[in-house]
Structures are given as C-alpha cells and as structure tokens.
Image (cartoon, rainbow, N blue to C red; front, side):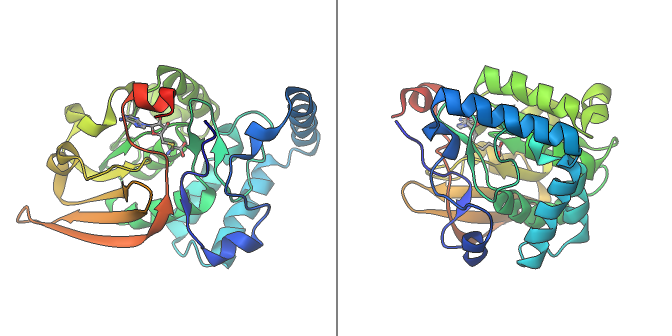
Length: 273
Ligand code: SAH
C-alpha cells in the first residue's frame, strides 16, 4: 500500500511555491540503486559544504517569509533542531513536504511542524509538561524538550518499537541530546491513544496522526489551562485545537484541513488496513 502525504495542509498556497511540493511520499518511488547514489551524493555534499545548519535556517526563513511562522520562539527552536538529523539519510530534509520513514508512515511537512509548534507555544513554556503522541522520528518531541527546558518534561509515545529506537538515535545527534541524557525528555513504546499517565497532567498535547474521534484519555490527561492539538477525521480531517478551561470545560475549534496517517492499532498500520 502506498501511503500518501501525512502531516500536510490541504491547499496551503505557499506549499506550491516551496521546493518540490508533492503529495506523495517521494523516496518510496526511487529504485534502490538510484536511492543509494542520491543519498551518497547528498551526504557528501553536506559533509563538504557543512551547510546543513545553514539550509535548515533557510527553510525556517522560507516558512517565515510565507507567513507560516510569526513567533520568534518557534523560529529559534526550529533553528536549534536540525531537521536533517530526523529524516532518512540523504532524503531532501528541507523540502516542505512529508517524507516516508518506513512502517507506512511519514515525518510531517515542515509547515505542519511549524503550525503545531505555534499553536502550542504558550503551553510549552519552561517547566511545562508536553506529550507528543505518534512521535515518529522524534523531531517535535525534541523541539518540545528544548522549549520546556530541563525543569520541564517532554514525552514521546510511539507504537512502532523500531521508530522509537531510531528517534532516540536522532535525538542523540541533535541539540536536544542533553535533555534525553538528563531525563527531561523520554520516548516510549505504547499505544498513544491512552496517553502517558505517568507525567500527566500535560500543558501541551500534540497528536501526529489522525484520530476518528478525540481520545478521552488525552482530554483527561490535559491540565486545566492546557491545550491539545490533534487531527480528527478519516478521509476528511481537520486539525482541532482543544482547550481545557480552568473550570474543566472544553472548548474545541478547527484550525485547518489536513491530511495525516491514521492514529490506529499497530496491526492495522502495518497491515495497511
Ligand atoms: N509527528 C511525527 C510522526 C508523524 S506520522 C513526525 O513528524 O516525525 C504518525 C506517527 O504516529 C507514526 O509514527 C505512527 O507509527 C504513529 N502512530 C499511529 N497510531 C499510533 C498509536 N495508536 N499509538 C502511538 N503511535 C501511533
């Protein structure tokens, strides 16, 4: 089964003008031979030019110019965490497009990561607790850890054990490595629909896969004053922003139409059902 884009906005105008926007997972189409030589070339190019960080900053600059990012805090964290460390070797890390990471899923497009960080910014202050459900490559979990700092807590939950292992390796190479070492960042193999009660309640919860409906456990684990950002739907999906008010009531609004892979069971995901 070919998984099409996950973690993209439908019809976001800037995506057409950004580099190579595509709605399908680009690396799955390459022959393994071409894939190898392209990876090799890109790795060498990065090595010789030392331009990875510059290119990452250029990607962030592009997102600012097109109005996706207006927050300085989001600029800073996306500059701190180099996206190239989280995508499969040699893949076009800075293209504004989702990318296959195996197991029928993708890393979300940079504009979606930026959008979610910005929606959660006020709930990712130093000392706060953040949960990243469907943490995949670990990119957003790393961003959360940098934002909440060593006194805070960033938790990733992902149901594919191999992705948890590779996300830990990715984080270890990134500027979020000290948080992993000191224990304020952790990634766990679990069904994220149940949240992660150990470090609840959370100021911020992000879900990186589309749920047919909002999981009750995630609402329960949200702190009063906290915010949950989650794609909801099946074929048609909306990125929903759920605020838990101080009196425990819930306010829900839709931010934009999106397309994400499903939040589902491991069996359904691997079987492609
Ligand atoms: N936000 C991540 C990954 C997005 S893809 C990134 O950008 O790298 C969605 C992720 O959700 C996949 O890694 C998938 O394996 C995971 N996922 C899907 N259903 C899940 C569930 N029930 N529990 C935990 N993780 C789940």
